[in-house]
Structures are given as C-alpha cells and as structure tokens.
View 1 (cartoon, rainbow, N blue to C red):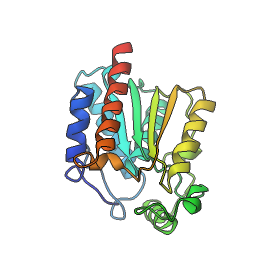
View 2: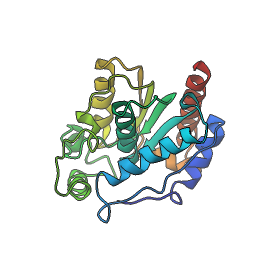
View 3: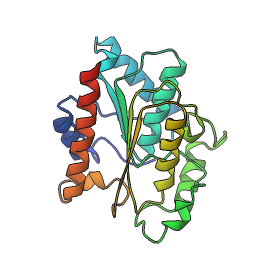
View 4: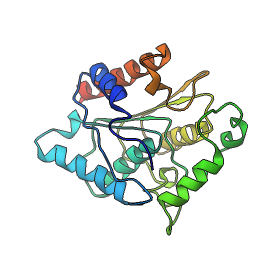
Length: 220
C-alpha cells in the first residue's frame, strides 16, 4: 500500500554494495488500486524477465522488507509451484506474512513498537485482499508450504509487533526442511536497516545480508 523504489533507494544501494551485485528494485502494484494478486504477478514476472535476459537463477537472490518480505516469500512459493528453477537464496527483513495479525507479539510488543500496530495490519490485510481468503498462501505465506525453497535469511528487530511473523516463518521453514537462519536484532525496530545512514546496526545488518547472498551465490 505504500513505499516505492525512491523510499528504498538508499537501502538498495547499500545492499548492492554489500552483496557485490546489481539490484533490480521493483515498482510493483500497490493496493487498494491493484490488490492481490497483482504484486505477486509483478514479482514473478520480474523473476522470469531476469532469467530471460540470460541471468542464471543461481546468480539471483530474491529480497524484500515488511510487506515486501511477505511478497518475497510469495514469489519463491509461486515460482516453485510453477516449476521454475529456484534462485540462489532469499532474504527478508521484518517480513509480514500473516494478514490477520494473530502473532502474540502483536500484543506483547505493542508498547515497544513505534511503527506497526495490530489495527493497522488488519486494515492493510483487508485492503490487500478485499474479497478473498486472508489465509491464501500467496497473500499470507505463513500458510504456505515452504518445502523446496532455497536457503533463507530472516532479519527482524526484537521490538517489533511483527516479531512473531518472523519467528513463526523461521520455524515453518525449518520444519519444511529449508536451510533457514533467523536473526533477531536486540533493541531494534521495524526495518531498522532503512536507517543505515544514521544507525550503525542498520549498516551492519545490511553487510550481513550481503555476506549471506555472496556465500550462497558462490556455492552454486
């Protein structure tokens, strides 16, 4: 519903330098004008386009933050279900994967989180999927099977109401046999990486994201 390639330009540039890779940032469709599944279609189309340019899937990482983190998971699941080759890895920052906001941290972290609250999440979920199933796996990847996905890194702050989205997604990936790393950053808020120009922890987290991408691209 919000955000753009302009709002995320600095973080993408830092990620590009850290990963030593080009970044294709998507100006994907936003709700309410274009609700689910428009964004998933845009993301999978972009993945196919990269492959059509001759870029090997083993040289591609799919990444996203917040709602884009959920979209990154959905893109991986959609690609797997379509029989597409998997990319080298996936990285997500503070992923939103539960449109119904059922995680315990929605309540337990509400006083600590200055950005995201349950009522906002529920409103955005209804706006993104206005006439459909809020448990659709491509809208809410918490309800998807993650079997067969590539190695994953999930970063999240300990002060987030979305903390349990990340924790539950990490557990689901592990249960489904995926090589997953869940990295909880103590004292940090939602998508703290976007403040890397003023926050040392944000810059360090982006460096770790880049190292993860480089490691898995080199293993292919």
